[in-house]
Amino acid sequence: MTERGSIIYLEGVTVDYDGFKALNGLNFIVSYNELRVVIGPNGAGKTTLLDVICGKTKPSEGRVIFGKDVDVLPLREHEIVQLGIGRKFQAPSIYGNLTVWENLDLSLKRESKGVVATLLGQSSPEERDRIGRTLETIGLGDCVHQRAGSLSHGQKQWLEIGMVILQDPQLIMVDEPVAGMTDKETEQTGLLLQSLAEKHAIIVIEHDMAFVRQIARIVTVLHEGAVICEGPVDKVQSDPQVQEIYLGHRTQKSAHAAAG
Picture (cartoon, helix red, strand yellow):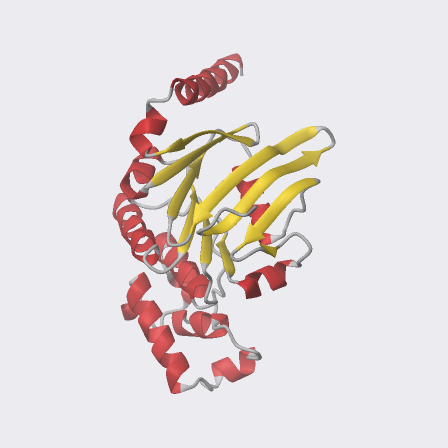
């Protein structure tokens, strides 16, 4: 049974790559309008979790249920996007030679909209209003006519988040959004994600624990493809198993570095 109030529900999900289980009987639930942070050492299954939800990877076992009992596993990636699941990858995927406005205009959820129509400015007043509100949300109102390729790294990340927003997702998944950002950009990104959680459910994959502490409401810790701890950030950081895994992981990395 799908848990009531959950927007995404994974039960017993296993992803097996020739004997290596990237996910191992994973159970994972996120509620509507929840901001969930997922952490874990490299190889814990964090990105694979997002890949399964968006349809990029198909598990060998388990169920993935979205909203009111919609089974996403038989669906293709574009069909999952149409359901209301949006994803922002770690590296920004924007059109560098187009302006900020043109990038957002192309991302609007429409039945049909070509690049030529976008460049000719054939958008309705309602669509232009939506883009304007999104620009305000992502803090790029002063960059409307700027070529996207000339934006700072942080601004490119915010632009892509805006492009995802305009697809009308109920669930937004964000993979390491503050990697490579300045401290100021990191803080602004945290505020942006917190504001978006008022209208969307959000899953954030992150390594930066200072950033996790800034935004986290509930933290899920993955290890070897399964959840080992879940709860408020203070509970997670004080959990002996989590401490052992992270300390052990760092010790192994240091030993490899010394040996090299």
